[in-house]
Length: 152
Image (tube, rainbow, N blue to C red; front, side):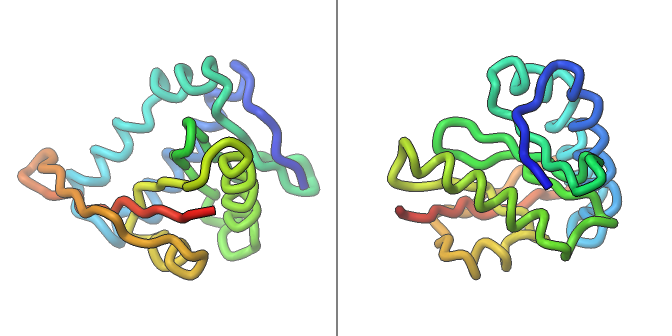
């Protein structure tokens, strides 16, 4: 198992991990307009920009399959996804450990926009709610999420 910095040839892999995870998991938590918002937010152009900025990482299992991804922008954890068949196997924990360790080398706090499926995990790891946001999406659906922080 290893975490490696993404390169340009990994953009499609990151897009696939993001799209598959959002499409399979998020409809259980969010209305269609919010799911579509997430899919558009994690589009190929945004991923490409993050890869070029050297802030995207991929998690590979022991068979060298890319099973997860995380993006780290300054002290913020973004785009943390693990493919559904590989969830509940510790990969998300390893990605989160990696992201926190990387951020705490330079900053005294980690910030994350918590999706509903992941909020319980962040609470267990010591993150605290600092703000609540609502975005009106297509179909007059709403995307609600918390901003959470964890201090060093």
